[in-house]
Image (cartoon, rainbow, N blue to C red; front, side, top):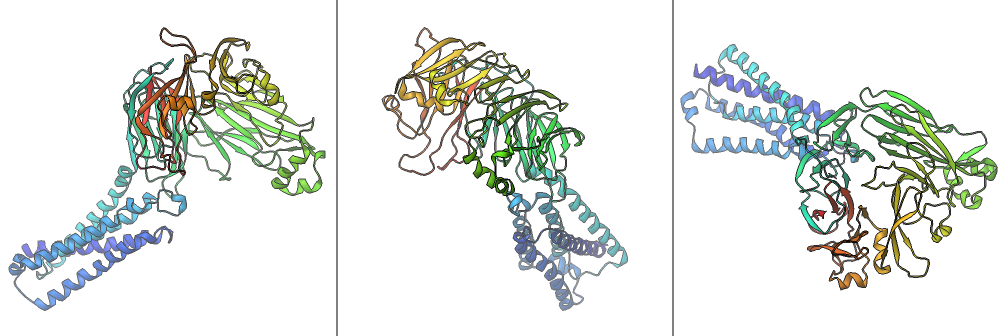
Length: 623
């Protein structure tokens, strides 16, 4: 009986190892040679061991002849140590070949997909299991007959199937980090900030921070982390460290959702996920529509994916349903006969919730020579400097409903002085207002939902120098009013933070000293009672008097309303216990911080590109 069991163990090891070798070679052959190059050394060594172990067993068995099985079972200490060394070596090679060691951070650069790497590693695992079984199976026992052979083959096949079946499970386990949060109520937006309320340490360089329902959503290079704006507590996480990420980001105008697009294999279709920013739960998972043009521009919201396709006839905007991945609507971008539109991505698009702004500037062909028209985008771009801005040049604005593709409104405006510069955009709305967002194109403002002209930005003499551009210094605006930072007409005069109503009438005005006014041009968070600005590289005497040294991390808050303890316009400096943005002696890699107002706090963070050791924390500024 003992001999038959020992024979089963030996045959099981042989079957498992042989199956693993076949599986490894077949799967490795299916991977691009460049991507599989790093796998070569551990795989070759394992295959060599898979060849040598049976050869050594056969030679030992031949030399020992008919030695008693009991003597072999007892074995010598040296033989036992050797067996453990062989088994440990095999398992070490398997760990060397573990998929995450060879999956490139960017699959597009020729790296392996995790599914491919785990596919090969499944075969490697079977090889290692077979080697271990074979090494510890008694050598000199008899084969145990056909029953032992059959039992060994069944056991080996079962082990092989189990190893193969486990690889997809391991792939998912390694690939996805997903934690969800319980539902909860968001804190209100702060009206002012005075101090650091909380800090959070990132694990990776931060790409961006957006506004979620309950606080900031941090975007890493491989996914998201949602935080509570009032406390800085981690609420949820969704990360895919080893996927090919096709695109992911925030849905501007929709604080409830973020999207994530990925692919898990060279032949696999892309997948899009829509996540709830309050809990991190997946609210939609669908196959991405197939695309003929890899360079086409795409926008994603909770229900649709919009794609802009340009061609000689003008092109179109196509809206895809995320559940079916089928086109739901198509909006033609027709070009009038005898007209030329700006070259090189001439259609400017901006998504805001379920509204898509489409802007295009065109003019008559007669302003161009035949050579300009035949030379393509480069020739047209060079010719624009000669053409200037003729009277027939028009910028057309169109706003589409992304659910149906219907045109909600259109308008024509004067283009900028430089035709190739299209500044049409959707302005950041005020956090405390119920007004609708507005579209800005040059001097013109329109309600995003209605297309009605809006005049909320107060007039200022400086506007005459910025004709056909939106009033400089506009920090936030909607249909109910605006917040602007405008220079006084006299040279080196103070700036004024102005709040205006729906008619553009100034309802409050706060003077800001000229030496700190330039900070208002950088990253800012506009609150109802204050303007918060990042203090980055440029230093002034006011900063030095406040005891802030060059390279120190600091934030400037300017109250826009008088309080019992402070006068409006008085600068307030918020510091971070000696934390530094950069070393002033190092002229390379000077880092800058950004700001975003969220529920419960104003968040300050340093986006990717940080050049120093360690990762700067995310801070939540609170009242």
